[in-house]
Length: 76
Image (cartoon, rainbow, N blue to C red; front, side, top):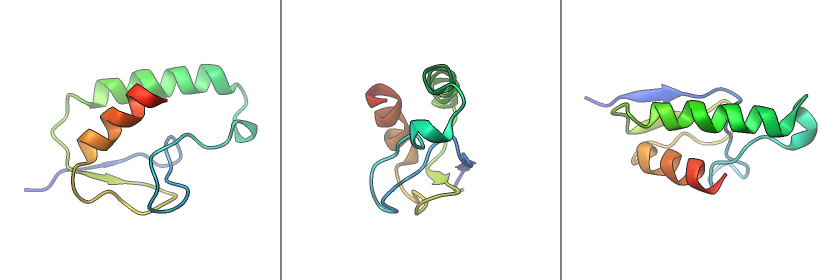
């Protein structure tokens, strides 16, 4: 069974096949606070057994999503 996680606008892939990233700061009301909150939330999601990540912006990650999300949290 494949398990997927949908992240909407919290994390994006621009370009569509690039690494995960936050939306640009100018699209957030309080960028540093928002990013800190999202990082903490995504850290909590790393406990889930997921291998696919569905995004509102960018290609989905269909294999290895947990590793990609971990790398994003550590890098972001």
